[in-house]
Image (cartoon, rainbow, N blue to C red; front, top):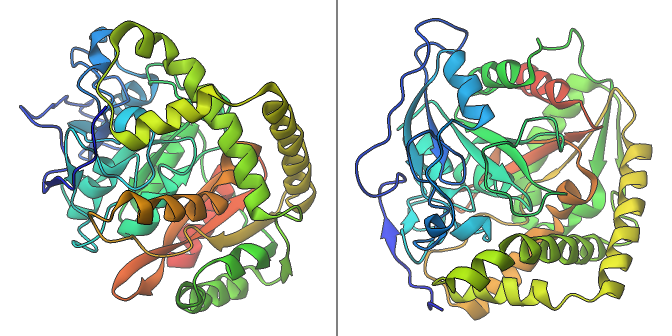
Length: 394
């Protein structure tokens, strides 16, 4: 087990020769370059998973992940593979093995994880867009911290083949972009559909989630919420999680941690890998979840899904802060980081619990650092959310 060190990497890409794969000469994404989180297979390149011992049981892939192949076929080219938190078990973006990628929007702060390198690569201008995965917030959080557009798609809508699994009931594959137009172009390719003809007609503001964020975050996001309300027209405040945001967070943590333990137990048993303390602790906690805790969490997931299904009929979207605060400073002690991780989870747990799509957009700045505003909708409404973002930024 390794103690985490505040290693800084100014390069979001993996050490060693840069991975490059040319896309089709023609297609809707021709001329664009994208980066790939090191949990996603690129043929002929070992998938490292953010841990030096992960490749010992994960053979070099012979084919691209579905999402990579689809983007290559659409004309985009792979420009590199990016640093990730170890086996996606992180939310702040600090990796004790490969380093912590720079947050170009706030260089003294973490980039957010576990898709840290992908967010850093886009924010730095090293690529046009980048792929990440999101189980508990791993696209949404770095999008907020780095001032990017990022999406956690409807669970199950994007083929997950060729991607390292963590928690199957929560795992999704999303992407980052600096501008809404590129963000939308990628969405049309991966969802295989064009933008809808009309905007949603009802905006809900999650008052409990907004109130949970720091006061400075609330103030920074209000102008964008007002613009969104003016665009859509019909606004009202609601309570997203009547049982409590922390209750939803606890249920998601039980389910995700238990599934992560089941996923990684064979690797741990076979390889006894080197792990940072926080990663090892998360896996140990997952192994100790009781059947009673899991059953209670499953019931809460049913309640959460019913709640959002009722709040979000077709044509309705809900907005909330993506994170309760901007990115923390680099190199903080574990005793300081642990409560921050728990607080972040209170604003991200609904994703894994309910499977609804969520788009995070640049929302404002607090003390010079970005914070994101998120839009969520009913299952399958991914392109409706992206269309809203396009019109909002027009």
